[in-house]
Image 1 (cartoon, rainbow, N blue to C red):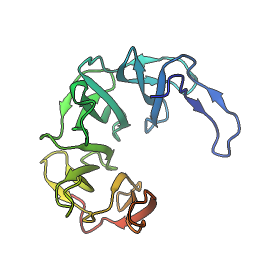
Image 2: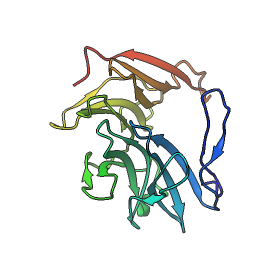
Image 3: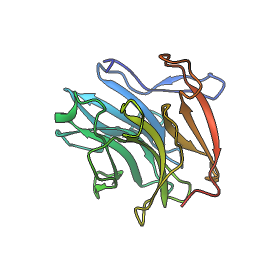
Length: 212
């Protein structure tokens, strides 16, 4: 992780830039609460990656997680503005490839930690649905002809646990995000790339017949 990575805010046209953090830590993986009152990010402090929040004016910096055995990141606020969805891996799995990852939720005051996914596979890059009842995320499968990890996009009902696989390609499919109405999936894929090349493009998918 690049130490000294810092957080900034600015207008959408790049003006009125303001620096939020100023330290020698890794501060990155940023998202914003639905009401715009909090900036959510990951910070690596003394080798330990945890979730933090800060106000857009640089005040109110608060540590959310205190888990020396887990590395948290890729976090988003759920629509209620109180619950945070994120992925984490055990520090003992740091060197494994693909790295086993688990998806959790936690309240932004650090209470109510809840494990969402089970198993030893990679459950990664979660993104909340607009009603807070489901999410999109990336999961690895062993169904490629060469048996290399196959990254695919999944949907999951957070109330029932029901999972739906929405991509079926030997290419990399990952980093899902959702339109505000939940009808459209945006994701990154290497499909169409020449053999041996790691080139990526953005794809859209209509989810209305697939979503929970």
